[in-house]
Amino acid sequence: MAEYWFFHPKFEVKARAFLAELPEPEVVHNFQIEKLDFVSAGTASSQIKLALKRLGVAGEILRRCAIATYEAEINVTAHSCGGTVNSNIYPDCIYLQFQDEGPGLEDIEQCMTPGFSTADDSIREMGFGAGLGLPNIKKNSDVLHIISEKGKNTLLEIIIYFEADR
Ligand SMILES: Nc1ncnc2c1ncn2[C@@H]1O[C@H](COP(=O)(O)OP(=O)(O)OP(=O)(O)O)[C@@H](O)[C@H]1O
Ligand SMILES: [Mg+2]
Image (tube, rainbow, N blue to C red; front, side, top):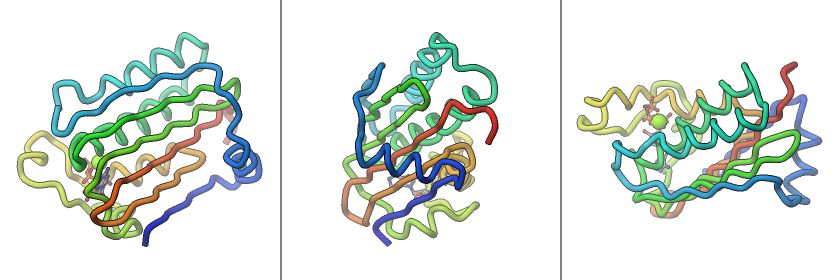
């Protein structure tokens, strides 16, 4: 499978219209994510969290954004050859694009299954590799879109709306 979509039912219509139009964001941040650099890993997600906090995004939403962003950043660090994250903040949502240079996900549905991981021992020794990152991203996001194939680049997109009532 080369593509995966998840929409929280409450936001599906709004999110599809947003993705079709892709309006200009209010605040943009771009970060590089280096392969296996676990010293820097987490920098992008903490900067994005700080930006959201400064804009007044609070509590539960901030927590969900921080978790989803961190898990996606760690995945690029641990499983890819390196990549980037573009964070686009709008008045009512955050739209994140994680792009990496491969090696891609062989079977996206399988990778979404809690407990599935291809992490090797060196990654597991650091406490990662439980196979819970992608399910956790899905749980905390209103939209999750993944395009990937073995041997190809991966694009992972997340939208989280700043609405407490979900
Ligand atoms: N950016 C990526 N590039 C290539 N493979 C990926 C990428 N992100 C995830 N994967 C694949 O999907 C699997 C599941 O990812 P997930 O985040 O759920 O678990 P994990 O990273 O292995 O462990 P955990 O997130 O619990 O530390 C990974 O083991 C890996 O095989
Ligand atoms: Mg992970």
